[in-house]
Amino acid sequence: MNKKRNIASLLALVVLLLVSLACGSSTSPSLVATSAPAADSGSQPQEQPTQQAPAPVVQQNYKVGDVVAIGDNVLVVLGWENVPASDFSAPEAGKKFVAVELLIVNKSQSAVSISTLLQMSMKDDTGQKYDVDFMASTAIGGGNVDGELSAGEKVRGKVGFQVAENAQGLQFVFDDSVFGTGKIFFDLGAEPVKVEPPAELAGETAQQTYNVGDVIAMGTTNITVNEVLYPAGDQFNQPNAGFKFLVVDITIENLSATAISVSTLLQMSVKDSSSQKYDVDLMASVASGGTTPDGELAPGEKLRGQVGFQVPANATGLVFVFDADFWGSGKVFVTLP
Image (cartoon, rainbow, N blue to C red; front, side, top):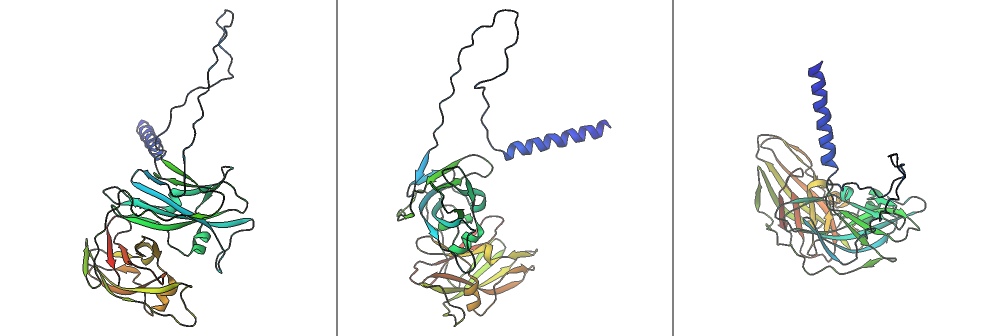
């Protein structure tokens, strides 16, 4: 029995430790006022000195266009807009879609991960919180800022929310540390607004790039961009107005002794000269006439496939980005013609 009781006590201690770690740092409580009666000392009660309430803490807010550094990140909110409903996604009754455009730089010396779902939210002037919304993100058309950022890497993208139609005083919130503390608050203003991005941000460094045809070794995986295509589409499948289809023909080879998994959605994207990110596009992949290289690669297996994107017709400085290990770190950047 004693042994079982000791094991149970040990488990309880581990649980408490994990909970405390997950909660991050905290502030010690202090008594401001109490309604409990004073203990009877047998003498006449003495008047207690009045305890002064601490001055209220004023939350520091930033505005659109401010460059803010927090933790490993430098962040700029470039603006926001109301997003019209699309054929595939519409807001609920009494609500609207809102997109916030961001620019983020990893100023640290190691890779960091960005998660819109875990780190970003919106509030209105009543304090009502709004989480990142899948349908709003669909209406935006992709280009989120999720994923790994290499040391010195910059990414630009949009985050979608669904908020009350009459919401006022919208505020974007970025939580720098999911399991710790540290938040930034950006007041978005009464009307949609957009500013030009800064020419350069602190911590930004050029990433090593490769060329089409290079065999690039990333750990035990070889990646080769064989060619880049710009299919016109057909009468049933056309790019959006002002955009064009871009298809990357890629070969991936597993040189390890264990199987690996490849996911185009999680591991592949395209960026332009402004660091705007473009996600994999289903219609562009269909226009390629090929097959995406998704799935498991057995030890020693080589797999070739075609991955499609939609990019602005006038986009410049296009770079294909491959995240070699979406559970770890390591990225490849290939300059596209």
